[in-house]
Figure 1 (tube, helix red, strand yellow):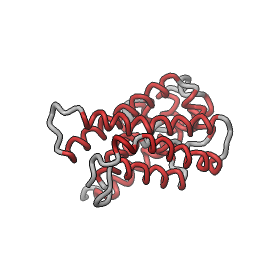
Figure 2 (spheres, rainbow, N blue to C red):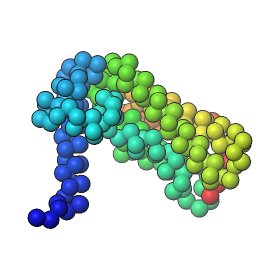
Figure 3 (cartoon, rainbow, N blue to C red):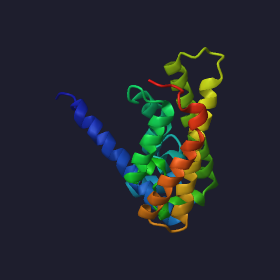
Length: 211
């Protein structure tokens, strides 16, 4: 017999990954992140503990299953910016688009999921780490895009400001979600907040990293 086609194998892997993630999220919400074990998740998903850890190296990865998209997101937006567009303008535009579609990656997670994060010191620490990783990825991209010298601190400083803007806005979405506001109301508030936050950066960064 021939080997299983690559496409089918990958599809089965993705199905297993999603199954584990779905059961983990349910258990985290029902029992709390800290109280839920990898063994609990394995039993619920009807897989071995080793299977869970093969797909998710850390328990936190099960809660933040879109972390790769989160960490790489700002750098990708800047890389894909339009001709003549600055990094600041591209990120502002993309954030407003995310607000319109209530994008989970910028913070629209729903009250139950937001509460799960807020109640877990481990998840809050991981979220801070992800923000730091996202900022570092953006700094690397800005350095490459602007041809900065290895000892030039400018890309890191710019990434700190741009990443900080997203961090503050993410936190506001989380806080408003925990207060019980609807996504529609949060989106209305965040559109104005984004204009103010990114507006503060217009002076130093309006002409930085223009494509």
